Image (cartoon, rainbow, N blue to C red; front, side, top):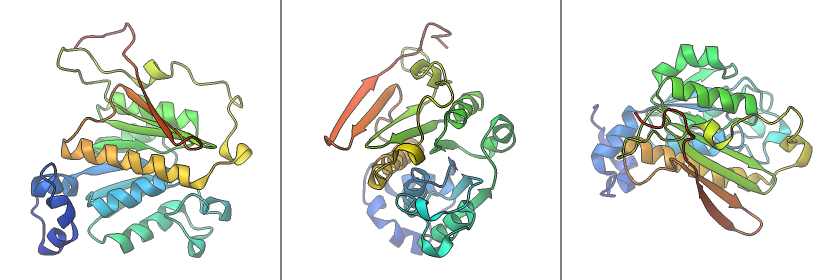
Length: 255
């Protein structure tokens, strides 16, 4: 792995002091290539914290532009970047935050074709999208290409996240669950309203997005216990976290 420069050692000193991360873990972060779907409410804190943490390459897939109604929750953007592509606005913010991070911009939607073309160049996928089509496409692509997936969702005052590695097995040889083991079918179109229709508290996306970044750091550095087979749910109004375990259904349960 590429060594850390003196400036990087100073920048990441608080990480390096942690025995769980140390210099070797920081080098893993520097070498990592992470694809983030969406530079919106969830993607904003994910990108900010992974850039600050020293993840070497961040891919951003988003075909949308910054609008005034975004700024209440999409904190990587600001009033000076209104109407810009979100990928460009996010890349500018990341460059100001950490010039050691390389940003690869994709001004297109994430679908199966996109994944088959680009995902093999990244080590980890993070889904911060706001629609079910993209979530299922991301889960299928990550499983197909054997990439860990950190996925989160938010609505009004509630959020959730989990980590998926359905191509891998636990110590007993049991395959980890897939996205469809948790959510077997997409809900019918229009059944679940969007945040544009019902509203959302901006700070909620910061809570869930930051936790998604933490899961990514754990996966890259090889520390802790990522949320594989566990769905973490957060109720902001009651300040309550709950964790639900889920398992693979009866299909190819062993490697």
